[in-house]
Image (cartoon, rainbow, N blue to C red):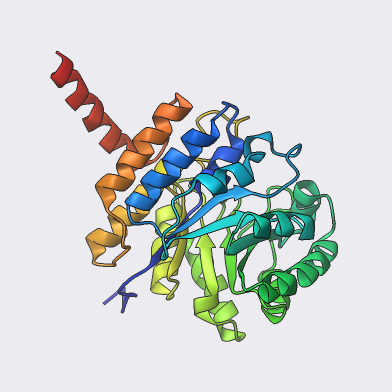
Length: 313
Ligand code: MG
């Protein structure tokens, strides 16, 4: 038995409306974003990161955060999440009625500086102020730790750096730590080593989630190993939406359809209806006006196009 006992069910945390769209150069209307999110909800996804409450000038694509949230269908079991960079963003998220927020910092100094324009120590101090405020408001808080598996500037990142951040963030009241493979450098052996190290040093496996990128084609292999380690929360993005606008065609986030297809085929329940999810991916492709990278998405979109052609022929 190589695989061992696997979790019976997992939670898929959908990041496409925020992590995917923030890198797009095309202008996507608030109504189109809401329509994409409605399709994601209809597929069975229950945790969706819909926007970011950053200063509108920083990410014009997400400047409509409050307007978008007001358009979303409110269902008791659907959790919408918003990214917040600071307490000002947190207040905007609260005013919009968000119940869950995400925060970000990096395990490597250079990436943190380039991405957030402050040191890791400064970012951590900011989050240690922000997290208790969010918890006092009854919000759920997740913290993304970027570059856990490698940094584009520094290369190797010491696992101890992640452990130190994890301990401090959990002590501040954070509910969930997201181990981010920011530039798709992780390999399955490393995934196993880092998760095992964190758990051995006292971090609860249920407090961990993984956020893999498919830049080098290893995202599903890494997800499988994380599942074997007992991880049950997986970030993913419909059709693999995301990636860098300055590197056309570069693979971005792990595609939700690929993750759901593989897990369901293995008997691991996701709660997601694959065909409906794939239809959401086709909608995203229509809105963006370009082909998206997810493998199951391409298979599905190809059969949709063939069906349309034979219908109109
Ligand atoms: Mg991502």
